[in-house]
Length: 114
Image 1 (cartoon, helix red, strand yellow):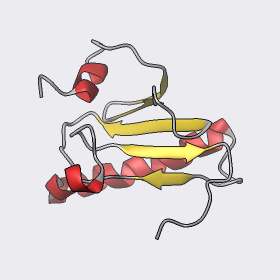
Image 2: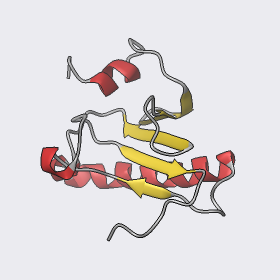
Image 3: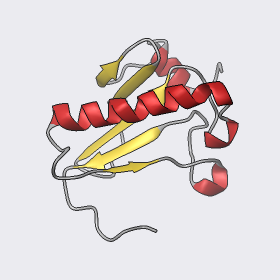
Image 4: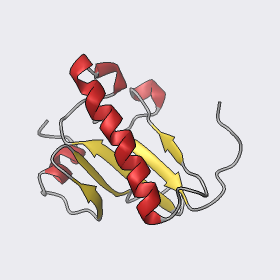
């Protein structure tokens, strides 16, 4: 997607502070953090949102959760706890229409949302 900010980050057109990268996944610090640690994890394949996942994307999403766990361990917040948020669509609060997972950590995050 030519106007997608995350696709531009993946292509290296917009600099970011990377946390993790492989052939399929990129993780980087959010430029407008909502917690002391706020990392975004995105697939390099452009997928608009959860509602647009295909059957073949299930393995990729599982791998993303494995990467989230690896990041939590490497950054030292796995045992204290963290929150993973995925918004889907405009009414779901999604601002960038490229599937992304927010990792929030570094402080007590308050009451359960659900």
